[in-house]
Length: 595
Image (cartoon, rainbow, N blue to C red; front, side):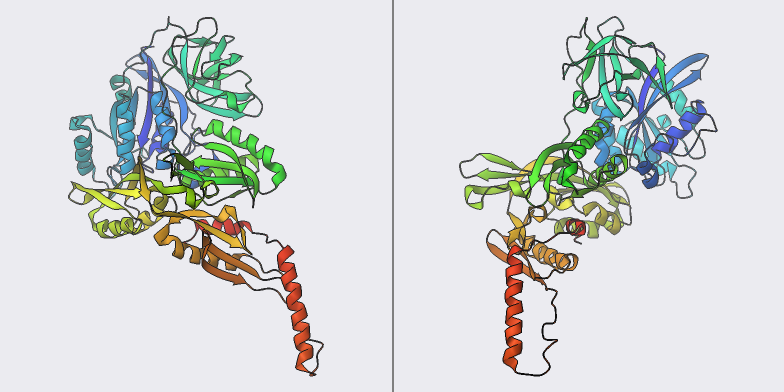
């Protein structure tokens, strides 16, 4: 146990975590030169295409230091705010963390938020100043920022360049000397925490865990405490680049378990594994339950694929524990699921993964956040979708979730950023200069306003410099209304949205205009209306396709023409009553792209 070190790499997005992990694997000869490639641990196509880490990955390395052989368990984590749940899970399985800071960008919002996560778990922090080889690097300035933030000695900061391989040996030495060995008692009953799981179509569910007390051996009868299920440990092993089976995994180590579990619901990330004969007294205190920020409906394009979509969602949830879902029905789209995501990028990734990994084509409805309707008798109703909104006469007011957002930016962009946040109904709470040209702005904003395109706009205004981190601070009363979209008088529940009354008219008008362009013309006229309750606030019409019924009239009396036109008009009216309007997939996506 003295020779084991468990650590993770935390940083803001694009500060060089995955590249650093590549170098560590290379220097410890965990991978041969032939197998080496960029972003080695990012094994999903999506991760490689976008150049971001979506999943945290565990890998074991062996390192010799002053004649002793050490086992290093590394977990590479994502940097984007939408995947912070992955980071919190990785931190729960470690004793130390490498805090990577880009020498040209300096400390950013996600750096600070991940750092606080690590400090809450009493992790030993090793600051690494990365990318010192870049022409724009300012190592001395950024080092001072790190020293101020952590309150440490300046000599503890390691200078490195993951791309050039500078400082890698210093990092490995610091991991061995500074990070404590895992504590735990090998003689106590088995107590291991599940921090990840993967679905394998041939072998069932692979559970990835960290042992806190005791040991687990091949062939043991094990029990998952939360679900109460009992399994045989058919295979246990360690995670190198490939899985390597072993006979036993001892205290403090990280490994995987295969026991032929077929049902996805039976594995819950954060659960504790113990022996059946000699169970442990308590489960490991894992990590808090995930709090979804954005809700959207996901529906199969073909209604017959509902069960298949459910199975796909279960398998995806194993690999992405921050996805929350429950079944729901919609008048326009049939059966589907109401899903909770941590942000818009998370929602986009889930949709892409469903399409790529499970061949499911899905329709996603308008994302919304969770509102609270306070009834006249004082009771609450949680509203995750516009269709769940109670009747206006039964509620006294609606509360919406507010967040505290920390934006770190260059001082040149303060004006436009404050203007953007004011436009999103935000209130500025604080402004702190971290250095002469870097400012931390604190705002309180409604979550509903930042769900759509706030992050993109923030990046555009600040030329990519501003970084955003946010936390939920609770619900506040707001003047929200439910905006319905009607086609020929029928409400389309999938296009409804809950918006602030001041923005409802503008929103309804733009949405109707957009739908008019997207809905194909039919043989009858289609009225597109936006309404709040029974009050129509905007209308557009899609004109009917018409046959020229006057083609056969050469001259002649006007009454004859009038008679033919009247006959056509009656036919159109009758057709409109029985005709139904097909809404193309683009129309649902149009709502997301309202600029």
